[in-house]
Length: 134
Image 1 (cartoon, rainbow, N blue to C red):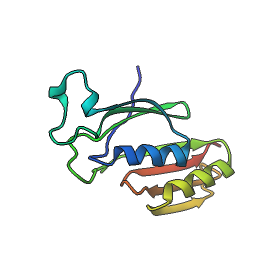
Image 2: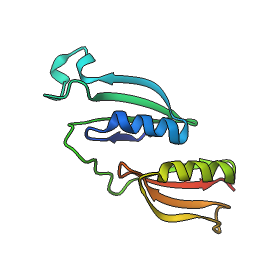
Image 3: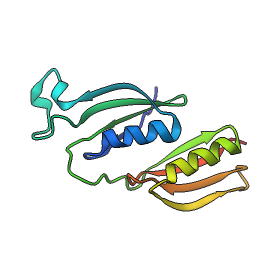
């Protein structure tokens, strides 16, 4: 059994994919636009070029994403992704990249459970917890 996050960017999915490719080395495994769906009834009206489904590999994890109904601003309330890295240098690089255009809630710092831990909300409104595995 697996649990995989499925994130709805409500119109900014393609931009988010580019951002995560650059920020954390995400690899696109699959990308389908609404106009490419085998059943055209599945398309969100007026948004044929938006992302219907994408699968990204981030490290050993798979994150699924879409533009959903293209309603505007995504709402990631009550959700955070944890990015666990091997070294402080990797954590600092990823944290800085994810924080670009976002808001830092807790700067990277040593904690009782990690040599480096920090929290931020990226430019898409998605919260991240970045840490070094002890």
